[in-house]
Amino acid sequence: MRYATRLVPLWACMLLSVAAQAAESEALKAGIFNPAREAPDFSVAGSDGAPLVLSAYRGKVVVLAFGYTSCPNVCPVTLAVLAQAHRKLGALGSQMQVIYITVDPERDSAARLKQYLAAFDPSFVGGTGSAQQMAAVRKSYGVTAEKIGAGTDYAVAHSSFVYLITRDGKLRALMPFGHKADDYVHDISMLLN
Amino acid sequence: MRLFHKRPWMVIAASTAAVAASGAVAWAAFAPVTFGSREETFEIPKGTWARRMAGNKVEILPSRIYLTLGIRDVLLLKNQDDVPQIFGPTLMMPGQSFRLPFELASSYQFACTAHASGQMTVVVDAQPGNPWQRLVWRARRIFRAVA
Image (cartoon, rainbow over all chains, first blue to last red; front, side, top):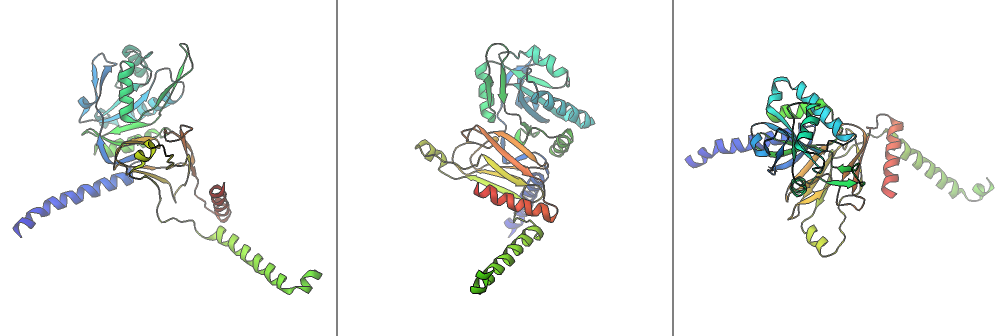
């Protein structure tokens, strides 16, 4: 009986955890993974000159986007929306980190990524590396990228959604393209709280 | 008319059909549109990967999915197989589910390696708010089911 009584707080915690997860999945604007898995870690060259290691951002909500600096329409829109969301978050913005992984490592050097991202928000960090390295990162997240055209003026058709990674490194949600800054503010605030 | 005089059962049959058709149209226009759940669920059953590896063509997810705001506006994908799967817009681990709500009526394109076209489209219709819209919504639903 004493043993059973000792288990009561444990059961209560488990129930609360399940209830919290259910409530969160009902409330987020993004698509939710259940159960959330560990976000695949990676180490690539960062646009700030230092290695970009995903797990180094534990403690922050990471907003992970894939794209390339020559992208004519999807990436500029996504990054502008994320920059707006970052501003709208105010003080909470310091607890969010946008990471932009290139799907075009051939053209996107660290310096080019830095210059490109600074136009949207100087806090954004870009990641690049060898073609194999970047392909491995894409594969681990299920992101597709296909080169279209030849020469130096090619395009890359790529997945346009954005991943939301919790403070403890869990791949929790996926925001499809087309959501507004307020939706990101809503979900990031929820994940931070 | 003469035909009807000779065969009164035809009058009865025609009247019954007309009443039934009117009733069906009235029901389609005025009955509220409801579903048991707002989730449209698709599941990868256990053993799908093995069946694919054996050369069987396994189609789980249609290339076009229709949802309706406020009624059935959540896409729920479940991977019950033993291996990770690219399912709809995302990579899903075994036992994992992905729940994607929609809040805007539109047509959404997702890259999807499970389809020959490489794309999956989710069409989200607006919620039918009046009798005419309900009628159109139901007619479109029948048309999509048979098309």
